[in-house]
Length: 121
Image (cartoon, rainbow, N blue to C red; front, side, top):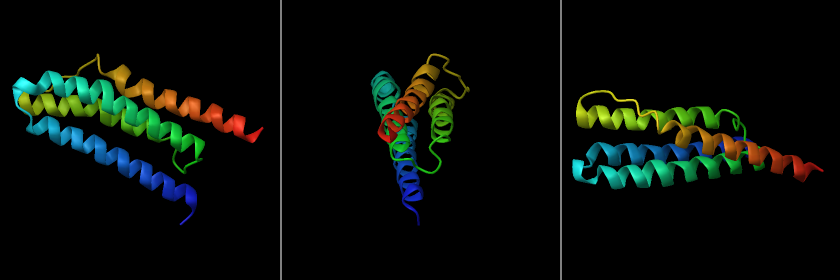
């Protein structure tokens, strides 16, 4: 298997595992801990994960590096809706979460693209 595809599989796998762990954590949490869960997962872990992985994939010239921000930003938006549906029995779209889902992944891809251009010259 080529190096670019291995990097892609590893990065997608790590991100999927982290995002799935946060989803499972949200589904099993009690209502008293929602504030800490929201702060830790949506304002720290998910943005850092998506930024770092997108940056690394761009610098390493991974195979599906341009698809990563779209997939994991959508997954980052789906997690609060799924958790709120399970806890509140009503689907809620949290519109204040979208910047923390989209901006880090696209920013990491953009910076990684610029860094990879600098490495060529």
